[in-house]
Length: 257
Image (tube, one colour):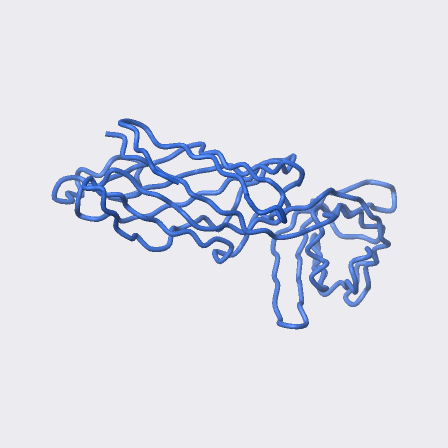
């Protein structure tokens, strides 16, 4: 891809996966920041609202898939992306800026059609630059559809939850929360509701997700509910056809002045 820098603003790039094995994905830049250190790096000249950062180049982009829903958790490991930043200098040479930073939380729309990704660097070369490119891959979890299943629920440690996700057990119960443990299939749980004896449904919020182990994977999910835990049923919304794909990205931010 040849880069052409505009005189003002930031460059927008759109990308789709080229592999026939992966669902088509569109990437659209939605915003960018270009903050350059002031003359002599004078701290008194740092702009308000920049949190004392003298330099920062950041780009935000939205992913959308043609025939998949996004199954990303709101939290993910920084290893989920491998994106390098490169500064483009005025003399048309380049300078490696190393790995781009990415937030620990990835935002996904309520309908799970869109996901926001962000990349940034906090140091530019001392030579004049015309812009920064961000290139690499991002791991995104997607699914074909969502289905619902209901299981009996007894709030005690050791009790099994029959959701068709292999062996799933309760490993901790507190006043308003419960921890479920099981294999990789447990990661298919997108939403969880507690149906009480009187038929009242209480929506749960996943507060933590942990995955460990090698050949034998152990997944732990902690769910918080808006009322005390009691016996009844669990209504689970599950991702079906879940897979993780590596999406190639190439984004650019031009110096806007």
